[in-house]
Image 1: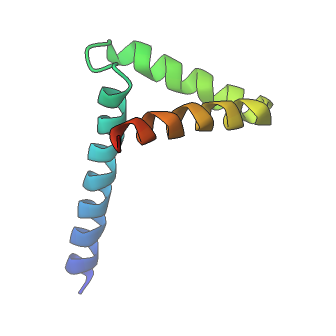
Image 2 (image 1 turned 60 degrees about the horizontal axis):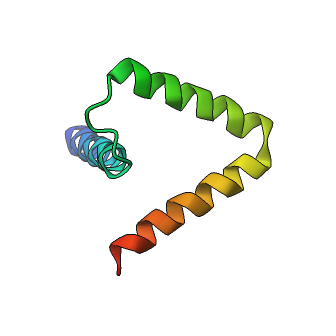
Length: 71
């Protein structure tokens, strides 16, 4: 039973990582260096903590990008 739970957790983790990688590609950052991407993620994490308006602004941009897919 424990092995099944571990396997399911690993599959879920793998799927989540694939989806996150897809976001990097969708943003047009596929060929950027990993250090740059990590730096950008760290920077945005600190900005989100400091400014609730930034979260709203970026969410709006993201929703618009997703809606472009459905057209």
